Length: 144
Length: 152
Image (cartoon, rainbow over all chains, first blue to last red; front, side, top):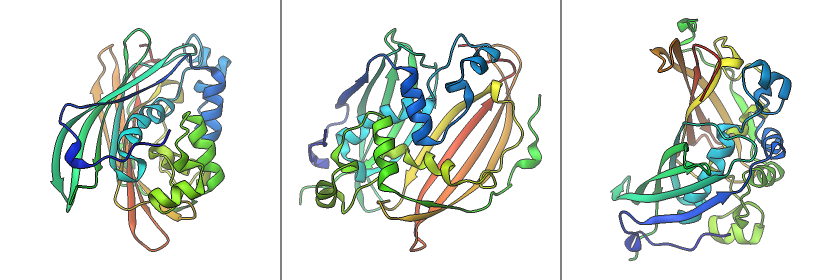
């Protein structure tokens, strides 16, 4: 979905960003992301390697979850307005897990000649465990 | 096992990375994003001047690296975790751009792990410059080598 055009003046500190969620990740999702991104660490697609590494099965690349989470930011501000995006990886996501992504605006400010906002984003699984916590910075047009 | 700190400051060979339409579509699909900015020329031209890649797309520089682009101290993949990732954008990146990416090991340090053992952190920074010589983005990647096989 294209983001709605948004002005800096209309954004409120504390405002929630629209939620994005992906239900029941599959191994095919991991393989598709491996091809798209070039991350062929076998721990994400090779059952034998995953087991030899002490894991019950393969798990999602953190960057797949981070890509899904980034849609909370682009859905709110629009891709071209993103100035920064930072994520910290916590728990891993396994086949069958949901990735539920939320965010909120924490600060409005002006910097580098732009009207900017800062916010937090969070991806959790269906049990409410944190997969990723992160932050973003964006610039938005101001009403004249 | 300690990670070789002599890698700090090592810089990889510059990587030339073409920002391609097909790769943008493939990547957007992989993160299940149907924003027309990634698919629809007319829409993207109106909204942003041209089709743009998603925020985390710069990770695809791996496809353009022949192995010499990213200086990596030897670590055990079975014990490796992606700890943090950051992207900063200074100028727009659009389809058709040709970026040069230069990666450098910014830091290597160790911490005691919460579940025992020593964790080693490898911080890699990559600067992206476009075909006009403009600095467009910076990525910062932290890899963690855990003391033992990873358990949640």
